[in-house]
Image 1 (spheres, rainbow, N blue to C red):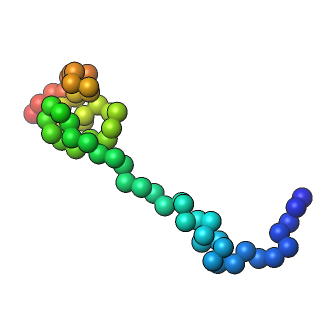
Image 2: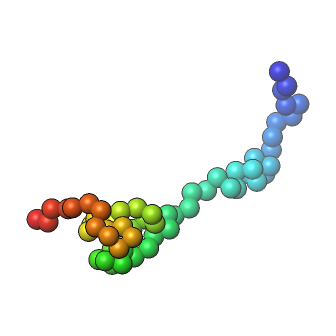
Length: 60
């Protein structure tokens, strides 16, 4: 098996890891209720997706 000849330095290691950061999810406003939701998902507050009711949620 191939083995590295030298230890990878901290600078090189951190340059490689520079793309490993997590990004925040893209949020949009629900056109029905105005709640912030993740794109392409049913709104957890009102149950609408693409301006249609997909899930009937019971209101307390």
